[in-house]
Amino acid sequence: MQKETENQIKIFYTKTKSDYELLDTGEGQKLEKFGPYTFARPYENAVWNKTLDKKEWEKADGVFIAGKAGAKPAWKMKTKLPKNWVMAHGDIKFFATPTSFRHLSFFPEQASHWDFIYEAIKSRTAPQGKTLGNSKVLPFPAVKFLNLFGYTGVASLSALSAGAEVTHIDASKESLTKLKENQELSGLSEKPLRILLDDCLKFIEKEAKRGNKYDAVIMDPPKFGRGPKGETWKIEEMLPQLLNGVKNILSDKPLFVIVTSYSTDSSSLNLGHALRAIMADCAGTVEQGEMCIIEKSCGRAISMAHTAVWKNK
Picture 1 (cartoon, one colour):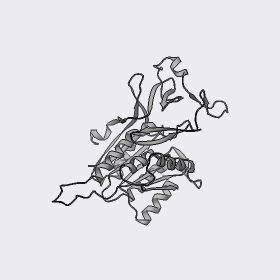
Picture 2 (cartoon, rainbow, N blue to C red):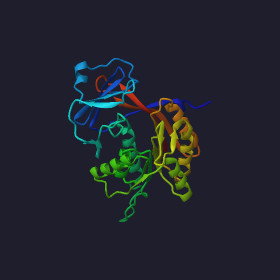
Picture 3 (cartoon, rainbow, N blue to C red):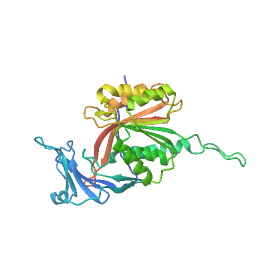
């Protein structure tokens, strides 16, 4: 029989100051504040009534219209917006930009992971033990952090600012360009960030052959996608291969492994079971749960994605 703790669901949400707010949800939509602008976007799981008055929703600077009867989905802007604008989460700065995929160039619900990454890496690299005489106690070597399917890289910047050596992989040239812009914007241009356009599975296989190891890994695989050379990714078929590949490139003393999924077919429990299986011989614990944002209108925790986190004891 499985332990009861292995089936518990945790709510992951951030407490760090951010320029983002979830204002309201309901009737298949969510109303959000990204810096100085507000947007209404589809959120199909919101099967309840809106809390805020209709007039508040009508104030949105932009609305994303889902495609119907052959029409392409697109933004309808009520306000003339700049190409992008600066946002911040703690000390990390990054650009927000409306995209054709309804996103704003980052996923705000992942802020809880950004905070965890920063604190875990800081804790590992901080000087340990006591000072002997006038000698200084040196910190541990820099944490080697790998971000797979890294998108525009706020997680990578959080690791970088905490002192990690970061490798960031994505199949989109546009996303990697935005990462470089965010790195410069955050004042981290001189920090060790390796940015690679590659297929994540192929990269892991190559790293295993090279004998390269990582102390911390985060991965946010899409339900379906293509690599830079047209490689096909299907999460239900390839996630086990991805997780096993990640295990092969972990260091002897890994710090954490994080996996996130937006697939409606997945569950946090399943992610937790999968992560627990591959990390069974490592001394650590797995937490699985929902990545949530607290809704300003009525204080509810609104789930946006599934996640599982293995962390060293």
